[in-house]
Length: 139
Image 1 (spheres, rainbow, N blue to C red):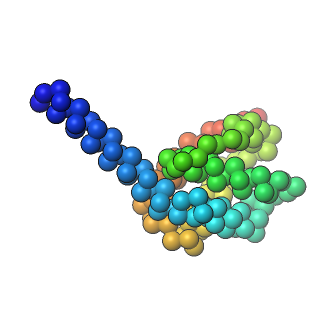
Image 2: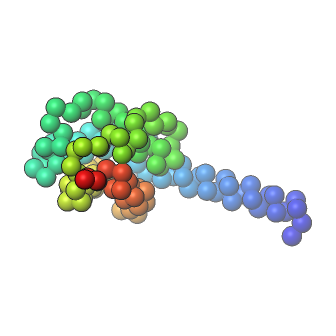
C-alpha cells in the first residue's frame, strides 16, 4: 500500500469512527434526550431509599446540568464538562459500592424509560464504571 492509499484509509477510518461516536450520542437523543434521561434518573434517585439521602439539600438544578454535560462528553457529543472533578465533588459523602450500584440501576431505569438501546446503555455504563474509584468513600 502506498502512502496515498494509507492516508485515504486512515481518513476513512477516522470518519467511520466519528460517525459511530455521533451515532451513540444520537441514540441517547442528543442534548434534549440526555436532559430527559437525567431528569428521569434524578426522579428515580430521589425516590430510591438507597440513594436519596446522598442528595439531601443538594443543588438539584446544577447537578442535573453537570450530569448532562458529563454524559454528553462521555458519548463524544458536542459538549464541554464544566463541573468539578469527581473526586472533589464526592469527597466526604461516604459513598460505598452499594450506593454507587443503586445510582447505576436508577440510571438504567431512566435509559429504559427513554428507549435507549441496550447496547448503547452498555457503552455508557462501561465509561461510567471506572468513576467509582473517584466517588467511593476513601476513609
